[in-house]
Length: 193
Image (tube, rainbow, N blue to C red; front, side, top):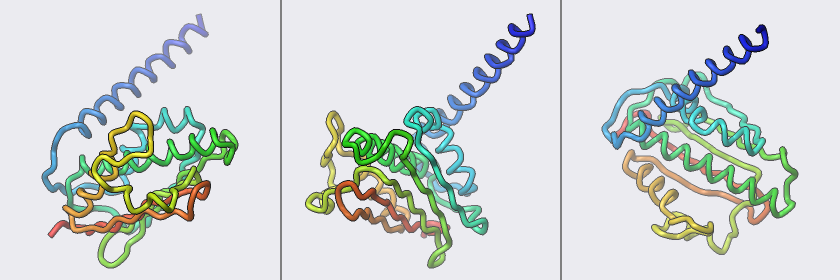
């Protein structure tokens, strides 16, 4: 009977967690592109919560370093979540490819998310130790329809670049080459002009 109570408590917690994830996904999926004021660290936490199960499945360590002075920003929140989630998914896929190519051992994947104040805005860096970017294709990465992945359409980085430009920010993708990991570096204003 005691084991049954423990099992039911675990089940109830799991159902509650699934409900929270569904609520977050519904909020993030709304095509809401108007500017709102939101808490930047909470947005990052919400984004990571949406894909936490995949992060755990791939046994990836996520390291966060957020400047405590960064709190509120004003920009479209849902597109921001989609963009950050896309960069994290790209990092997970790059880590998966590095493991497949025997460049990394399973469980050795790391994604580092850093946010610091810079030039009156937020510099956000999402960096991984995955497969890296071939220098010959780096200049094509944000082109509409360009992809290096099987069964992808090549929209993610293009949409991210458009979003960053729409809020007055800057985006660069850096890698020392294949097998060397990659970093998406974004500079975003605290407020859109």
